[in-house]
Length: 216
Image (cartoon, rainbow, N blue to C red):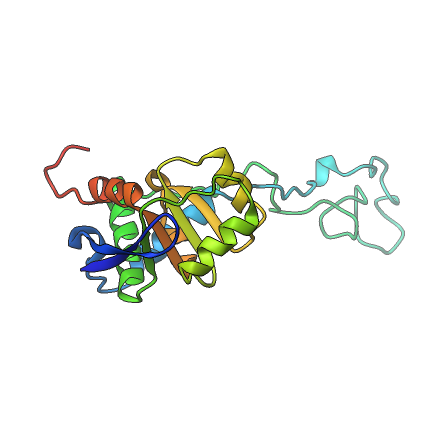
């Protein structure tokens, strides 16, 4: 599979870039692995802020509300029991829960390849020689994106994040800048358009184009 390559200025180049079939031509029989990788990414980024008070942590309730017998009411030793309003919470979150998940390295790589393959079939991938915004202005970056006809949520994969590039793209809510070695299933699947620089694409080919028996 070959795609048209764009120059640094956003014009179509005379040469085309060939995509590695081992990375962008993977057959996805079902979406189970993609779902697992997607959920693992979300779970590992989850911040546990939920905290409820148990019976022993609720303030007050040290005195018995009424005497044990003779009132006709049920026996209670504290107003902070879980069945009372304002009492402690039974089995609530305590702020120490671990929601992280694990996925093997081979499964993670395969999921990324499946996601990239789906995007390549949808013609959502753009190759550019280099994505440069020398003046660091958002207006310049938008002009280049318009030339590339990048629409929707845009994922830009580069080798290195330069200060000018970060400055130009940080205020664009629909654009995510990522180093190619940190590609993940979550960002790939959520992107409507994926832009690879030539160097970034080559790094992805080397990283994900490995077969069984190859060294890590």
